[in-house]
Amino acid sequence: MTLALDLDPARLDDAALDLLFREARTVNRFTDDDVDPAEVMAAYDLAKWGPTAMNISPLRLAVVPRGEARERLGSHMSDGNRAKTLEAPLVVVAAADPAFHQHLDVLAPHREGLAEDLEGKPEQRASMARTNALLQIGYLVMALRARGLQVGPMGGFDAAGLDADLFAESGWTSLLVLNIGREVAPGGTHPRAPRLDATDAVTVL
Ligand SMILES: Cc1cc2nc3c(=O)[nH]c(=O)nc-3n(C[C@H](O)[C@H](O)[C@H](O)COP(=O)(O)O)c2cc1C
Image (cartoon, rainbow, N blue to C red; front, side, top):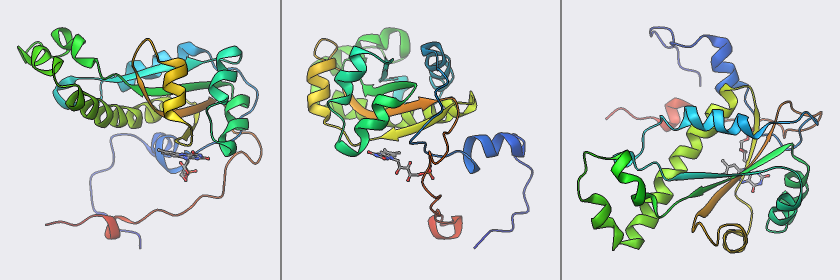
């Protein structure tokens, strides 16, 4: 059911809302056009403004151009995801940093003593990092789309193997792999599946 809304118009116009939401798709195959890693930095610089608990900002990104690192990443992808990860113009591993508390003097100067308190609580830090980095990944997907890029997020990979291979030094924990391209190649998306309507997903208490 479509809601008949009698509301003020959205602050973004329909073209922007189509780009971000209604026409944005999960992409499995891209045209060969290159994507510069600087595009990911620019998207991060937008996404970083999205809210996180106490401003802990635990999202970390590893950009993986084509080459040796991409081959290594591919070896950790599930069989169904490997080829598209190897072929994508650019790939990003989105991860959480459980050592986020080391930046709290800058990020949360109003929370004096928090970093010291969290130092001895690695499980709490890991949980906070995961929850808030997942939120930030959502912001990142929208930021990439806002910059006109196409995204294919994937959770199907061996996270423990990837972390041991690529993040042994940093201690980051991988959450999602994002294939990124400039345009959708023919047949590069699945048929669009419907979503739940607001009438099914939203209740006013
Ligand atoms: C957290 C997450 C994990 C996903 N994992 C995979 C995956 O491992 N392989 C895959 O092909 N697609 C994966 N997808 C893609 C989803 O199936 C896709 O985004 C969803 O069906 C919506 O498709 P649409 O954006 O084209 O409407 C994942 C998406 C998300 C957000």
